[in-house]
Image 1 (cartoon, rainbow, N blue to C red):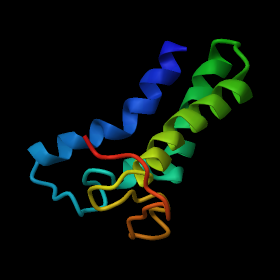
Image 2 (cartoon, rainbow, N blue to C red; image 1 turned 90 degrees about the horizontal axis):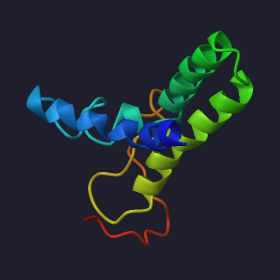
Image 3 (cartoon, rainbow, N blue to C red; image 1 turned 180 degrees about the vertical axis):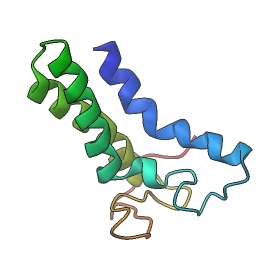
Length: 106
């Protein structure tokens, strides 16, 4: 369980981009590519590969990893601040908000 909780936080590792001068609005800026469904699939494949090597149920671990990582971007799209989340990167460089944004940004 702790693994999947940590994976849900992984997309916000993109705040390191600020230290390297990467602007918020850049594809690898905050709420950028790391908040996309493609990123979630990539992480899920890595987790499934590790699970397979450990002889654990790889499909289950991969699916749970995808849900954990993808949920972060979806929840960020439900907030009322920032530029939105790049949910569909690399297919779109747009940032998206949900039509309803009930979560205030802290």
